[in-house]
Length: 177
Image 1 (spheres, rainbow, N blue to C red):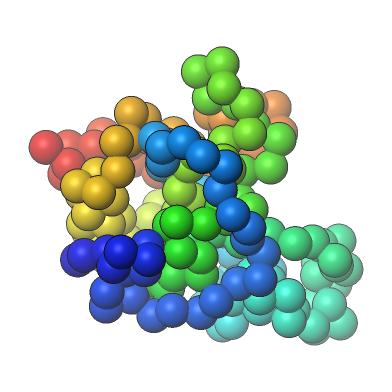
Image 2 (image 1 turned 90 degrees about the vertical axis):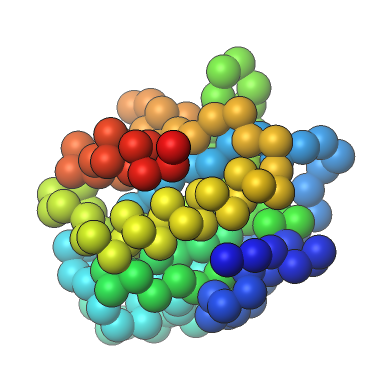
């Protein structure tokens, strides 16, 4: 894997999200790991992609009414089969963290890259997802001065729980050494 000068990963599927903007000056120093499934607990389909591109049909499922009008994105989305989709250039700020703080520094979107795993807090992630996440992390580490990797729950405690207790941090981090 490699990143272009513009922050796009070569080999990933690129689906541009409008839910991003320019980063403030400063380094990218944090990776944030999330999980997402739409509707909750259901995998496959294009609902996550539609959410990140503001094209979700809110009438397609009752849950979608609760997120109508939400403007969110992530840099990357890793499906259960390992397919990797990039929505926002790493050079831009994706809207994935919300109200957040890491090691005393607020506004994590300003200095982080958000990676969404297709999943939930209640099921294990797949071998393919760990393999792609590890390769992606190593690629990002080679480009940016990353000082931390956190779960969404770590930067927004009490508000978020992902990537959840089924995310195997030891397995993931061991694959980075």
